[in-house]
Image (tube, rainbow, N blue to C red; front, side, top):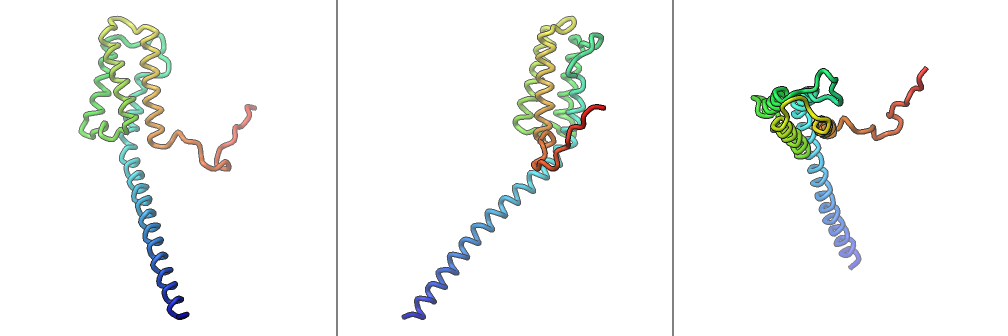
Length: 163
């Protein structure tokens, strides 16, 4: 009876070990596949996000007093963003949901402001547009992972005191 018990124990251990290995390997392969997909999507997004980020320069953090846009310029800015979204490169196709929300919030604010503005922007409209453009820029950076601090403290650059 002793040899049978050890043979059954070995067989049970083999079956349990095989099942655990199968589940672990399958989970690891799924994680690796998701990681590869995320990397390839990021690589596809990069040129489109760079172009959109560049377009947002038309709505800077602060307009100079001589460059505050009027109604015609606001419509032109909105059309530039619209052209990027639906261009042959289909930039809008690559936006994440959060970036899409920020993009359309900016587009809606541009349209609403252009519809009610006849001369220069009011201070409130200017603040709103600049905040929405800033939110879009931040979301683009976050989607690409370029706005994150390094994960290891020894990688973080030290601040150098001014001379």
